Amino acid sequence: MCGMPQQPPVRSTPSRPRRPDASMSLLTTVMDHSLDEGYAEAAARKKARGDSGVPRPLRAKLGLAAGLVLAALVVTVGAAQARIEAPVLAKEREELIDRVEEATAGADRLEDDVDELRDDVGDRQRAALKKHGGSRGELMGLLSGATEVQGPGVKLVVDDKKEAEQGGGGPRESSGFSDTGRVRDRDMQRVVNGLWQSGAEAISINDQRLTALSAIRAAGDAILVDNRPLVPPYTVLAVGDGKRLSTRFQNSRDGQYLHALQENFGIRTSISVSDELLLPAAPSVTVRTAEPKAGKGTS
Image 1 (cartoon, rainbow, N blue to C red):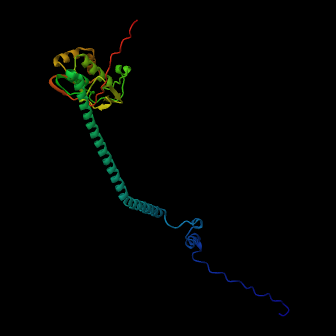
Image 2: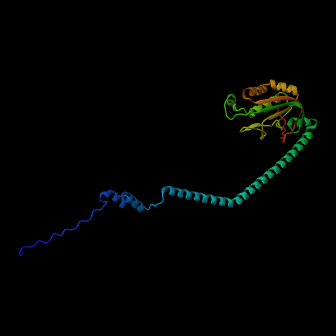
Image 3: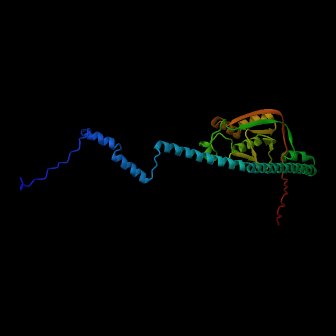
């Protein structure tokens, strides 16, 4: 038996026992790695960008709350500033009111002075007429408008169309009028001239006495008599033979013109005869004299 080499015994490594869950590798992987690698990578990228982990709805609510706080802060600051500036504004307003009242009082005083001066001028003019006119002084004062007039006559009221319109066109516009249903200065000029021609001895419009030098003009839509604005309705008082004056005026061309305004443009008019009218004196009368020019002699 000697001399026969012996082979080393074969040493076999014992195999590991098989796991019971070896057949459930998929479930094992899911259990060991509960977070998918894709989600993990997305979370890593979000963290690298610096995004917080606050949910988006919560971030929106926080932003809204911050905006409301900022708005409340602005309103509070504005209210506080307005409360601080309120006394200053009130003081400036009171000062402005005082200045307006003072200027108004000054204007009233000046107007009173003007009225006194007008009365004084009127008295001096009447005295001059009486002195130099002799027995005709009263008549001269009446015709010139320097004295008030009382007697029978007619009362003519001329007013704009009810709810007069602005703008427009028509036959009157071609003659310098505006077909708006408003009484114009040319209308009043024709009325006054018609009354003079019909025999009126004295005329006033809205207590403004007319003289031989009176002017009726327009400033925009306002009618001026001797540069004083009048407000419609326009009340025209004319002293004279009432019935005759009324008839002659209505039959005259100017009376027919006024009737046409009433029929075609809605101008409102009314005329009545009165037994007693009182017309004031003109506020100021310019006294002018004229002397006859000597004729040239013939050789």
